[in-house]
Length: 365
Image (cartoon, rainbow, N blue to C red; front, side, top):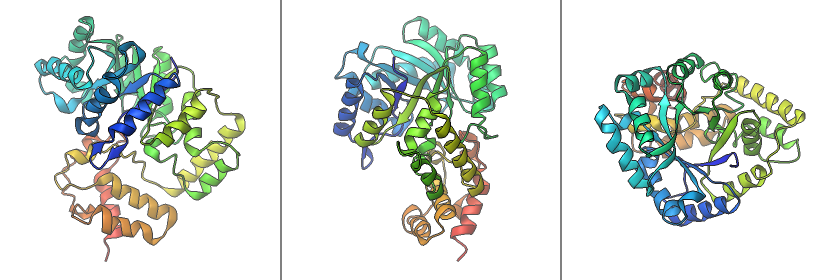
C-alpha cells in the first residue's frame, strides 16, 4: 500500500455541489497510479463527500481495488443506540458493505469523555466484530497527554490520525511532534492529516516562498507533504486535492517518494522562523466552526483576510473582507461570544478574541 491518500474533505466543486465529472477523473487517475486510500467523514461537505465517493468510486470500481476510511463524528449522535444506525447510513451513503478503517473522529479530552459515557468505543468494536469495518482507530486533536490516556485505556486502537506538518511540529497548541512520539511509544501506525495545513504551506509569504524556490525543484506543497511522509511509522499521508492539477503534482513526487534532504530540511527550518515572525493565525479552514455559528460568520475567511493583511500590507485584504466575506453580514464584530466555535476548533484557537482583533483591523472606520 502506497502511503499517500486522497482526503475527501476538500473536493472539486461546482458552486455548492461536488463536481462529479472532475472528481471521477481524479479518482480514476489516482487508482491508475497505484494509490488506493480514500478518507471521508459524515460531515464533510455537509454529507456530499460520502455521496460523491459512492458515485465516483464505489459504483465504478471493484471493492478490493481501494481502501476507504470513514469516521464516527460527535455531532451526529447523542445516545449509544444511535451509533449503529449512523454507521449503517454511512455505509449506504458511500455505497459499500464495509469500511476498511473506522475512526473515532476528532478526539480531544471533552469529546473522549462523551464517547466513554456513551460507550462509543465498545459499540464500535462490536460493529467491527460484525464485519461493518475491518480496522479500528481514532483521529485526534489535543495535547499528547490526552492521546496517551486514550491509547492506554483502549489498546484496541490500531491506527491514529494526527495533524502533522512542519509548521505545527513544535507548536505548543498542536503538539505534532509530541503526539507523533506518543504514537511511536505505543507502536501505532500514523495517518497524517493537514500536511499542508489547509493550504497555508502551499501559499507561502514571498520571503518563505523564495527560500524554497532557491532549492531549484518542487513546489511548496511538495516539501510539506514530503516532510510529513519522511518520518518512520507514517502509514498514510492525506492530501485534500481540489483540482486534477493538484493531483498530478502530488502524484509526481509521491509515486517515487524521497524524504527531504539535509538542505531541504534546513530550508524548512528557515520558513518556520519566518512564520514565527509574522504572527499568522494558524487556521486550516476546516470550517467546523461555521456550521453552528448563530451569526453566520465566515470565520476562516475572515482569518484568511487577517493573515493576508499581515503578510502583504495592501488593500486587497480590506477589499475581500468588506466586499466579499462580509458583504451580506457576518462581520467579526457580529460575534455574540457563545463559544461554540472554540469548542469544536481542532486548532484550539481563541476564536472570540481573534475575531475582536479582526474587527479592530478591518472595521475601525
